[in-house]
Length: 484
Image (tube, rainbow, N blue to C red; front, side, top):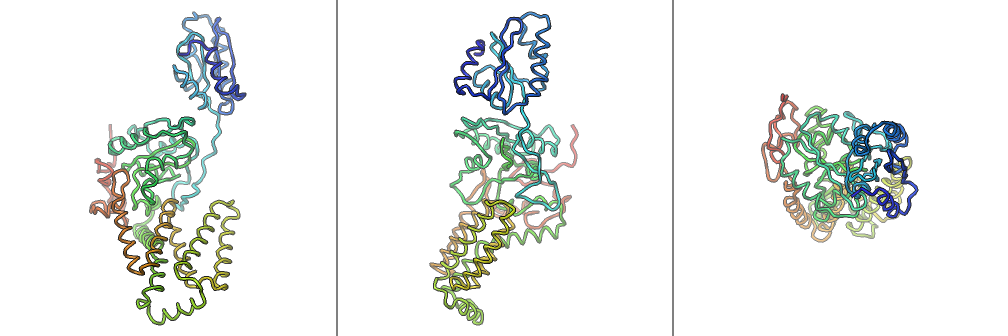
Protein backbone atom coordinates (compact mmCIF):
# COMPACT_ATOMS: atom_id res chain seq x y z
CA UNK A 1 0.00 0.00 0.00
CA UNK A 2 1.05 3.61 -0.55
CA UNK A 3 -0.09 5.38 2.67
CA UNK A 4 3.44 6.08 3.98
CA UNK A 5 4.96 8.33 1.32
CA UNK A 6 8.30 8.72 3.10
CA UNK A 7 8.72 4.95 3.14
CA UNK A 8 7.85 4.69 -0.57
CA UNK A 9 10.31 7.43 -1.51
CA UNK A 10 13.06 5.83 0.56
CA UNK A 11 12.43 2.45 -1.07
CA UNK A 12 12.68 3.94 -4.56
CA UNK A 13 15.94 5.66 -3.64
CA UNK A 14 17.43 2.43 -2.27
CA UNK A 15 16.43 0.33 -5.29
CA UNK A 16 17.75 2.93 -7.77
CA UNK A 17 20.96 3.50 -5.81
CA UNK A 18 20.00 7.18 -5.27
CA UNK A 19 19.91 7.81 -9.00
CA UNK A 20 20.29 11.52 -9.73
CA UNK A 21 17.97 11.32 -12.74
CA UNK A 22 14.94 10.61 -10.55
CA UNK A 23 13.70 13.88 -9.09
CA UNK A 24 11.75 14.05 -5.83
CA UNK A 25 9.94 17.28 -4.99
CA UNK A 26 8.18 17.55 -1.67
CA UNK A 27 5.27 19.93 -1.03
CA UNK A 28 3.11 20.50 2.02
CA UNK A 29 -0.54 21.07 1.13
CA UNK A 30 -2.88 21.64 4.07
CA UNK A 31 -0.34 19.99 6.39
CA UNK A 32 -0.18 16.88 4.21
CA UNK A 33 3.00 15.67 2.53
CA UNK A 34 2.73 15.51 -1.26
CA UNK A 35 5.60 14.11 -3.34
CA UNK A 36 6.12 14.81 -7.04
CA UNK A 37 8.42 12.13 -8.50
CA UNK A 38 9.59 11.89 -12.10
CA UNK A 39 12.39 10.42 -14.20
CA UNK A 40 14.10 13.46 -15.69
CA UNK A 41 15.45 12.01 -19.01
CA UNK A 42 12.02 10.60 -19.89
CA UNK A 43 9.85 13.55 -18.95
CA UNK A 44 9.22 17.08 -20.13
CA UNK A 45 10.10 19.64 -17.48
CA UNK A 46 7.85 22.18 -19.20
CA UNK A 47 4.79 19.93 -18.83
CA UNK A 48 5.58 19.31 -15.17
CA UNK A 49 6.06 23.01 -14.40
CA UNK A 50 3.20 24.35 -16.51
CA UNK A 51 0.55 21.81 -15.60
CA UNK A 52 1.33 19.82 -12.48
CA UNK A 53 3.27 22.21 -10.22
CA UNK A 54 1.12 25.18 -11.19
CA UNK A 55 -2.06 23.19 -10.51
CA UNK A 56 -0.80 22.07 -7.11
CA UNK A 57 0.12 25.66 -6.22
CA UNK A 58 -3.39 26.73 -7.14
CA UNK A 59 -4.92 23.91 -5.08
CA UNK A 60 -2.74 24.90 -2.12
CA UNK A 61 -4.34 28.32 -2.03
CA UNK A 62 -7.92 26.98 -2.03
CA UNK A 63 -9.95 26.33 1.10
CA UNK A 64 -11.05 22.72 1.51
CA UNK A 65 -10.93 19.82 3.93
CA UNK A 66 -7.78 17.67 3.87
CA UNK A 67 -10.00 14.59 3.77
CA UNK A 68 -10.79 15.35 0.12
CA UNK A 69 -7.23 16.23 -0.95
CA UNK A 70 -6.77 13.21 -3.23
CA UNK A 71 -10.07 13.80 -5.06
CA UNK A 72 -9.35 17.51 -5.42
CA UNK A 73 -5.89 16.86 -6.87
CA UNK A 74 -7.31 14.23 -9.22
CA UNK A 75 -10.08 16.50 -10.49
CA UNK A 76 -8.23 19.82 -10.60
CA UNK A 77 -4.84 18.75 -11.93
CA UNK A 78 -4.20 20.22 -15.37
CA UNK A 79 -3.15 17.10 -17.22
CA UNK A 80 -4.91 15.33 -20.04
CA UNK A 81 -3.99 11.77 -19.01
CA UNK A 82 -4.33 10.72 -15.36
CA UNK A 83 -4.17 7.16 -14.03
CA UNK A 84 -4.91 5.84 -10.56
CA UNK A 85 -2.38 3.33 -9.26
CA UNK A 86 -2.38 1.46 -5.97
CA UNK A 87 0.75 -0.72 -5.86
CA UNK A 88 4.44 0.00 -5.50
CA UNK A 89 5.14 -2.02 -8.67
CA UNK A 90 2.84 0.29 -10.66
CA UNK A 91 4.58 3.33 -9.22
CA UNK A 92 7.94 2.05 -10.51
CA UNK A 93 6.49 0.94 -13.85
CA UNK A 94 4.90 4.30 -14.68
CA UNK A 95 7.89 6.20 -13.31
CA UNK A 96 10.14 4.50 -15.84
CA UNK A 97 7.59 5.02 -18.61
CA UNK A 98 7.92 8.79 -18.38
CA UNK A 99 4.95 9.49 -16.11
CA UNK A 100 5.04 11.85 -13.15
CA UNK A 101 3.91 10.25 -9.89
CA UNK A 102 2.02 12.17 -7.22
CA UNK A 103 2.05 10.53 -3.78
CA UNK A 104 -0.17 11.93 -1.02
CA UNK A 105 0.54 10.95 2.56
CA UNK A 106 -2.14 8.73 4.05
CA UNK A 107 -3.70 7.83 0.69
CA UNK A 108 -3.78 4.21 -0.51
CA UNK A 109 -3.66 5.33 -4.15
CA UNK A 110 -1.33 7.50 -6.18
CA UNK A 111 -1.71 9.43 -9.42
CA UNK A 112 0.37 8.83 -12.55
CA UNK A 113 0.32 11.76 -14.96
CA UNK A 114 1.66 11.41 -18.48
CA UNK A 115 4.49 13.89 -19.01
CA UNK A 116 6.59 12.04 -21.55
CA UNK A 117 9.32 13.95 -23.35
CA UNK A 118 9.48 13.80 -27.13
CA UNK A 119 12.57 11.62 -27.59
CA UNK A 120 11.46 9.88 -30.80
CA UNK A 121 12.70 10.56 -34.30
CA UNK A 122 10.40 11.98 -36.93
CA UNK A 123 8.43 9.95 -39.45
CA UNK A 124 10.58 9.21 -42.49
CA UNK A 125 10.28 7.23 -45.71
CA UNK A 126 10.76 3.43 -45.49
CA UNK A 127 14.39 2.28 -45.65
CA UNK A 128 14.03 -1.42 -46.53
CA UNK A 129 10.70 -1.37 -48.39
CA UNK A 130 11.04 1.34 -50.98
CA UNK A 131 8.04 2.32 -53.04
CA UNK A 132 7.58 4.11 -56.35
CA UNK A 133 3.91 4.85 -55.82
CA UNK A 134 2.14 4.78 -52.51
CA UNK A 135 2.59 6.11 -48.99
CA UNK A 136 6.02 7.37 -48.02
CA UNK A 137 5.64 7.21 -44.24
CA UNK A 138 7.21 4.50 -42.08
CA UNK A 139 6.93 3.33 -38.50
CA UNK A 140 9.20 4.80 -35.84
CA UNK A 141 10.31 3.69 -32.36
CA UNK A 142 7.30 5.25 -30.61
CA UNK A 143 4.37 2.97 -29.78
CA UNK A 144 1.67 5.65 -29.84
CA UNK A 145 2.89 7.16 -33.11
CA UNK A 146 2.85 3.73 -34.75
CA UNK A 147 -0.71 3.13 -33.57
CA UNK A 148 -1.63 6.56 -34.92
CA UNK A 149 -0.23 5.75 -38.37
CA UNK A 150 -2.50 2.70 -38.49
CA UNK A 151 -5.57 4.41 -37.02
CA UNK A 152 -5.16 7.23 -39.55
CA UNK A 153 -5.92 4.67 -42.24
CA UNK A 154 -8.49 2.48 -40.49
CA UNK A 155 -11.22 4.68 -39.02
CA UNK A 156 -13.55 2.30 -37.26
CA UNK A 157 -14.56 1.22 -33.77
CA UNK A 158 -13.92 -2.36 -34.88
CA UNK A 159 -10.15 -1.87 -34.74
CA UNK A 160 -9.46 -3.61 -31.44
CA UNK A 161 -6.16 -3.45 -29.56
CA UNK A 162 -5.16 -5.81 -26.78
CA UNK A 163 -2.17 -4.59 -24.76
CA UNK A 164 0.27 -6.32 -22.45
CA UNK A 165 3.76 -5.75 -21.08
CA UNK A 166 6.54 -8.30 -21.62
CA UNK A 167 10.02 -8.38 -20.12
CA UNK A 168 11.13 -8.50 -16.50
CA UNK A 169 13.34 -5.43 -16.76
CA UNK A 170 11.99 -3.66 -19.87
CA UNK A 171 8.21 -4.12 -19.38
CA UNK A 172 7.90 -3.47 -23.12
CA UNK A 173 4.41 -2.53 -24.24
CA UNK A 174 2.99 -4.87 -26.87
CA UNK A 175 -0.19 -4.19 -28.84
CA UNK A 176 -2.11 -6.91 -30.69
CA UNK A 177 -4.27 -5.31 -33.39
CA UNK A 178 -7.17 -6.89 -35.28
CA UNK A 179 -10.46 -5.87 -36.86
CA UNK A 180 -13.36 -7.31 -34.91
CA UNK A 181 -15.83 -9.07 -37.18
CA UNK A 182 -13.20 -9.69 -39.84
CA UNK A 183 -10.44 -11.63 -38.07
CA UNK A 184 -10.97 -15.14 -36.77
CA UNK A 185 -11.10 -14.95 -32.98
CA UNK A 186 -9.16 -18.20 -32.60
CA UNK A 187 -6.21 -16.56 -34.36
CA UNK A 188 -6.24 -13.62 -31.94
CA UNK A 189 -6.55 -15.97 -28.97
CA UNK A 190 -3.66 -18.10 -30.24
CA UNK A 191 -1.42 -15.05 -30.65
CA UNK A 192 -2.32 -13.73 -27.19
CA UNK A 193 -1.73 -17.14 -25.62
CA UNK A 194 1.76 -17.39 -27.09
CA UNK A 195 2.61 -13.82 -26.05
CA UNK A 196 1.47 -14.43 -22.47
CA UNK A 197 3.67 -17.53 -22.28
CA UNK A 198 6.81 -15.48 -22.97
CA UNK A 199 9.00 -15.24 -19.87
CA UNK A 200 12.14 -13.28 -20.66
CA UNK A 201 14.41 -10.68 -19.09
CA UNK A 202 13.51 -8.02 -21.67
CA UNK A 203 12.24 -7.21 -25.14
CA UNK A 204 14.36 -4.75 -27.14
CA UNK A 205 12.83 -5.10 -30.60
CA UNK A 206 9.94 -6.81 -32.39
CA UNK A 207 12.45 -9.28 -33.86
CA UNK A 208 12.75 -10.88 -30.42
CA UNK A 209 8.99 -11.35 -30.26
CA UNK A 210 9.06 -12.81 -33.77
CA UNK A 211 11.62 -15.45 -32.85
CA UNK A 212 9.90 -16.33 -29.59
CA UNK A 213 6.44 -16.95 -31.03
CA UNK A 214 7.31 -18.51 -34.38
CA UNK A 215 9.72 -21.07 -32.85
CA UNK A 216 12.85 -19.91 -34.64
CA UNK A 217 14.43 -23.40 -34.88
CA UNK A 218 11.41 -24.92 -36.60
CA UNK A 219 11.89 -23.50 -40.09
CA UNK A 220 14.37 -21.48 -42.10
CA UNK A 221 11.56 -19.71 -43.96
CA UNK A 222 9.79 -16.82 -42.21
CA UNK A 223 6.25 -17.55 -41.03
CA UNK A 224 5.66 -14.00 -39.78
CA UNK A 225 5.78 -10.91 -41.98
CA UNK A 226 7.93 -8.01 -40.79
CA UNK A 227 7.21 -4.57 -42.22
CA UNK A 228 7.95 -0.91 -41.55
CA UNK A 229 5.07 0.36 -43.70
CA UNK A 230 1.71 1.34 -42.13
CA UNK A 231 -0.18 0.78 -45.39
CA UNK A 232 0.98 -2.85 -45.51
CA UNK A 233 -0.23 -3.41 -41.96
CA UNK A 234 -3.56 -1.72 -42.69
CA UNK A 235 -4.12 -3.89 -45.76
CA UNK A 236 -3.29 -7.04 -43.78
CA UNK A 237 -5.73 -6.09 -41.01
CA UNK A 238 -8.50 -5.53 -43.55
CA UNK A 239 -7.86 -9.03 -44.92
CA UNK A 240 -8.27 -10.64 -41.49
CA UNK A 241 -4.71 -10.84 -40.22
CA UNK A 242 -3.30 -9.84 -36.84
CA UNK A 243 -0.62 -7.18 -36.31
CA UNK A 244 1.75 -6.91 -33.34
CA UNK A 245 3.11 -3.44 -32.52
CA UNK A 246 6.11 -3.40 -30.18
CA UNK A 247 7.24 -0.29 -28.34
CA UNK A 248 10.74 0.96 -29.29
CA UNK A 249 10.66 -0.93 -32.60
CA UNK A 250 10.06 0.55 -36.08
CA UNK A 251 8.95 -2.84 -37.42
CA UNK A 252 5.49 -4.35 -37.01
CA UNK A 253 4.75 -8.08 -37.18
CA UNK A 254 1.91 -9.47 -39.30
CA UNK A 255 0.41 -12.91 -38.59
CA UNK A 256 0.06 -15.28 -40.36
CA UNK A 257 2.62 -15.07 -43.13
CA UNK A 258 2.48 -17.69 -45.89
CA UNK A 259 5.00 -18.03 -48.72
CA UNK A 260 2.78 -16.35 -51.30
CA UNK A 261 2.66 -13.17 -49.20
CA UNK A 262 6.37 -12.55 -49.81
CA UNK A 263 5.82 -12.40 -53.58
CA UNK A 264 3.35 -9.53 -53.30
CA UNK A 265 3.91 -5.86 -52.56
CA UNK A 266 1.59 -3.02 -51.65
CA UNK A 267 2.29 -1.45 -55.02
CA UNK A 268 0.46 -4.36 -56.64
CA UNK A 269 -2.74 -2.61 -55.57
CA UNK A 270 -1.83 0.48 -57.58
CA UNK A 271 -0.59 -1.05 -60.83
CA UNK A 272 -2.35 -2.44 -63.88
CA UNK A 273 -3.16 -6.14 -63.79
CA UNK A 274 -0.96 -7.13 -66.73
CA UNK A 275 2.09 -5.35 -65.34
CA UNK A 276 1.63 -6.69 -61.80
CA UNK A 277 1.08 -10.24 -63.09
CA UNK A 278 4.31 -10.05 -65.10
CA UNK A 279 6.19 -8.80 -62.02
CA UNK A 280 4.84 -11.63 -59.86
CA UNK A 281 5.82 -14.23 -62.46
CA UNK A 282 9.31 -12.72 -62.52
CA UNK A 283 9.52 -13.09 -58.74
CA UNK A 284 8.53 -16.75 -58.85
CA UNK A 285 11.13 -17.34 -61.58
CA UNK A 286 13.71 -15.46 -59.49
CA UNK A 287 12.89 -17.70 -56.52
CA UNK A 288 13.46 -20.85 -58.61
CA UNK A 289 16.64 -19.50 -60.22
CA UNK A 290 18.08 -18.46 -56.85
CA UNK A 291 17.49 -21.95 -55.48
CA UNK A 292 18.41 -24.26 -58.35
CA UNK A 293 20.87 -22.56 -60.73
CA UNK A 294 24.21 -23.34 -59.00
CA UNK A 295 23.09 -26.89 -58.17
CA UNK A 296 21.95 -27.66 -61.72
CA UNK A 297 25.21 -26.33 -63.17
CA UNK A 298 27.29 -28.41 -60.73
CA UNK A 299 25.24 -31.53 -61.52
CA UNK A 300 25.57 -31.08 -65.28
CA UNK A 301 29.26 -30.27 -65.30
CA UNK A 302 30.18 -33.01 -62.80
CA UNK A 303 27.93 -36.03 -63.47
CA UNK A 304 25.49 -35.41 -66.29
CA UNK A 305 27.58 -34.03 -69.13
CA UNK A 306 25.48 -36.02 -71.65
CA UNK A 307 22.60 -33.61 -71.02
CA UNK A 308 24.64 -30.64 -72.28
CA UNK A 309 24.83 -29.94 -76.05
CA UNK A 310 28.24 -30.88 -77.46
CA UNK A 311 29.25 -27.38 -78.52
CA UNK A 312 28.26 -25.93 -75.15
CA UNK A 313 30.04 -28.73 -73.31
CA UNK A 314 33.22 -28.06 -75.27
CA UNK A 315 32.93 -24.36 -74.37
CA UNK A 316 32.51 -25.22 -70.68
CA UNK A 317 35.51 -27.58 -70.81
CA UNK A 318 37.67 -24.86 -72.37
CA UNK A 319 36.69 -22.35 -69.69
CA UNK A 320 37.32 -24.83 -66.88
CA UNK A 321 40.70 -25.86 -68.26
CA UNK A 322 43.30 -25.20 -65.57
CA UNK A 323 40.81 -24.75 -62.70
CA UNK A 324 42.17 -26.97 -59.88
CA UNK A 325 38.95 -27.29 -57.87
CA UNK A 326 35.80 -29.34 -58.47
CA UNK A 327 32.70 -27.41 -59.53
CA UNK A 328 31.09 -27.62 -56.08
CA UNK A 329 34.09 -26.16 -54.27
CA UNK A 330 34.45 -23.52 -56.96
CA UNK A 331 30.81 -22.47 -56.58
CA UNK A 332 30.96 -22.64 -52.78
CA UNK A 333 33.96 -20.27 -52.69
CA UNK A 334 32.21 -17.73 -54.89
CA UNK A 335 28.92 -17.91 -52.98
CA UNK A 336 30.68 -17.37 -49.65
CA UNK A 337 32.63 -14.47 -51.15
CA UNK A 338 29.44 -12.87 -52.42
CA UNK A 339 27.69 -13.33 -49.06
CA UNK A 340 30.61 -11.65 -47.30
CA UNK A 341 30.33 -8.72 -49.70
CA UNK A 342 26.56 -8.56 -49.16
CA UNK A 343 26.89 -8.54 -45.38
CA UNK A 344 29.58 -5.88 -45.62
CA UNK A 345 27.28 -3.78 -47.78
CA UNK A 346 24.59 -3.99 -45.09
CA UNK A 347 26.86 -3.08 -42.17
CA UNK A 348 29.14 -0.34 -43.48
CA UNK A 349 27.87 3.28 -43.74
CA UNK A 350 25.47 3.86 -46.62
CA UNK A 351 27.64 6.50 -48.31
CA UNK A 352 30.37 3.92 -49.01
CA UNK A 353 28.63 0.54 -48.81
CA UNK A 354 27.38 0.14 -52.38
CA UNK A 355 30.61 1.41 -53.88
CA UNK A 356 32.67 -1.03 -51.81
CA UNK A 357 30.52 -4.03 -52.72
CA UNK A 358 30.49 -3.24 -56.45
CA UNK A 359 34.23 -2.64 -56.61
CA UNK A 360 34.87 -5.69 -54.43
CA UNK A 361 32.75 -7.94 -56.65
CA UNK A 362 34.41 -6.70 -59.85
CA UNK A 363 37.95 -7.00 -58.52
CA UNK A 364 37.30 -10.33 -56.83
CA UNK A 365 35.68 -11.91 -59.86
CA UNK A 366 38.29 -10.67 -62.31
CA UNK A 367 41.19 -11.69 -60.08
CA UNK A 368 39.72 -15.14 -59.41
CA UNK A 369 39.32 -15.84 -63.14
CA UNK A 370 42.81 -14.57 -63.99
CA UNK A 371 44.33 -16.65 -61.21
CA UNK A 372 42.60 -19.78 -62.51
CA UNK A 373 40.74 -20.36 -59.24
CA UNK A 374 37.27 -20.24 -60.81
CA UNK A 375 35.96 -20.35 -64.36
CA UNK A 376 34.18 -17.43 -66.07
CA UNK A 377 30.97 -19.45 -66.37
CA UNK A 378 30.88 -19.92 -62.59
CA UNK A 379 31.11 -16.15 -62.14
CA UNK A 380 28.09 -15.81 -64.44
CA UNK A 381 26.17 -18.51 -62.56
CA UNK A 382 26.79 -16.90 -59.16
CA UNK A 383 25.97 -13.43 -60.53
CA UNK A 384 22.62 -14.67 -61.92
CA UNK A 385 21.89 -16.37 -58.60
CA UNK A 386 22.72 -13.22 -56.62
CA UNK A 387 20.64 -10.99 -58.87
CA UNK A 388 17.67 -13.37 -58.54
CA UNK A 389 17.70 -12.87 -54.76
CA UNK A 390 17.37 -9.09 -55.04
CA UNK A 391 13.58 -8.86 -55.71
CA UNK A 392 12.90 -10.06 -52.15
CA UNK A 393 13.13 -7.60 -49.25
CA UNK A 394 12.41 -10.01 -46.39
CA UNK A 395 15.79 -10.73 -44.81
CA UNK A 396 14.74 -14.12 -43.40
CA UNK A 397 13.52 -15.28 -46.80
CA UNK A 398 16.86 -14.37 -48.39
CA UNK A 399 18.69 -16.28 -45.66
CA UNK A 400 16.46 -19.33 -46.19
CA UNK A 401 17.27 -19.24 -49.91
CA UNK A 402 20.97 -19.13 -48.99
CA UNK A 403 20.82 -22.27 -46.84
CA UNK A 404 18.70 -24.32 -49.23
CA UNK A 405 20.90 -23.24 -52.18
CA UNK A 406 23.90 -24.79 -50.45
CA UNK A 407 21.86 -27.92 -49.65
CA UNK A 408 20.91 -28.29 -53.33
CA UNK A 409 24.58 -27.84 -54.28
CA UNK A 410 25.58 -30.65 -51.90
CA UNK A 411 22.98 -32.94 -53.45
CA UNK A 412 24.28 -32.10 -56.92
CA UNK A 413 27.91 -32.67 -55.85
CA UNK A 414 27.19 -36.19 -54.57
CA UNK A 415 24.49 -37.54 -56.91
CA UNK A 416 24.18 -35.09 -59.81
CA UNK A 417 20.67 -34.44 -61.13
CA UNK A 418 19.37 -37.32 -59.03
CA UNK A 419 20.70 -35.53 -55.94
CA UNK A 420 19.02 -32.28 -57.00
CA UNK A 421 15.69 -34.09 -57.39
CA UNK A 422 16.14 -35.84 -54.03
CA UNK A 423 16.75 -32.53 -52.23
CA UNK A 424 13.86 -30.96 -54.16
CA UNK A 425 11.51 -33.69 -52.91
CA UNK A 426 12.69 -33.09 -49.35
CA UNK A 427 12.29 -29.35 -49.85
CA UNK A 428 8.71 -29.56 -51.11
CA UNK A 429 7.69 -32.05 -48.41
CA UNK A 430 9.16 -29.74 -45.79
CA UNK A 431 7.34 -26.74 -47.22
CA UNK A 432 4.04 -28.64 -47.38
CA UNK A 433 4.27 -29.62 -43.71
CA UNK A 434 5.20 -26.12 -42.56
CA UNK A 435 2.48 -24.00 -40.97
CA UNK A 436 2.10 -20.40 -39.90
CA UNK A 437 -0.16 -20.29 -36.84
CA UNK A 438 -2.13 -23.27 -38.05
CA UNK A 439 -2.31 -22.12 -41.68
CA UNK A 440 -0.51 -24.23 -44.34
CA UNK A 441 2.56 -22.36 -45.57
CA UNK A 442 1.91 -23.04 -49.27
CA UNK A 443 -1.64 -21.71 -49.21
CA UNK A 444 -3.47 -21.42 -51.55
CA UNK A 445 -1.45 -23.81 -53.75
CA UNK A 446 -1.13 -26.71 -51.31
CA UNK A 447 -3.72 -27.52 -50.22
CA UNK A 448 -5.32 -26.10 -53.34
CA UNK A 449 -8.14 -23.67 -52.62
CA UNK A 450 -9.50 -22.58 -55.97
CA UNK A 451 -11.37 -19.59 -54.57
CA UNK A 452 -8.11 -18.30 -53.09
CA UNK A 453 -6.05 -18.82 -56.24
CA UNK A 454 -7.63 -15.65 -57.55
CA UNK A 455 -5.12 -12.82 -57.26
CA UNK A 456 -2.34 -15.15 -56.08
CA UNK A 457 -0.22 -14.92 -59.25
CA UNK A 458 -2.51 -13.24 -61.76
CA UNK A 459 -3.74 -9.87 -60.54
CA UNK A 460 -7.45 -9.29 -60.92
CA UNK A 461 -9.19 -5.88 -60.94
CA UNK A 462 -9.85 -4.54 -57.45
CA UNK A 463 -13.60 -4.34 -58.03
CA UNK A 464 -13.70 -8.10 -58.73
CA UNK A 465 -11.97 -8.97 -55.44
CA UNK A 466 -15.12 -9.04 -53.34
CA UNK A 467 -14.18 -11.85 -50.97
CA UNK A 468 -11.50 -12.38 -48.35
CA UNK A 469 -9.39 -15.51 -48.08
CA UNK A 470 -11.37 -18.28 -46.31
CA UNK A 471 -8.37 -19.26 -44.17
CA UNK A 472 -8.18 -15.71 -42.79
CA UNK A 473 -11.76 -14.65 -42.20
CA UNK A 474 -15.25 -16.06 -41.83
CA UNK A 475 -16.60 -12.66 -42.89
CA UNK A 476 -15.62 -13.19 -46.49
CA UNK A 477 -17.67 -10.49 -48.20
CA UNK A 478 -15.85 -7.15 -48.41
CA UNK A 479 -18.55 -4.59 -47.72
CA UNK A 480 -18.55 -1.43 -49.78
CA UNK A 481 -20.24 0.58 -47.05
CA UNK A 482 -21.54 -0.06 -43.61
CA UNK A 483 -24.03 1.94 -41.63
CA UNK A 484 -24.62 1.60 -37.96
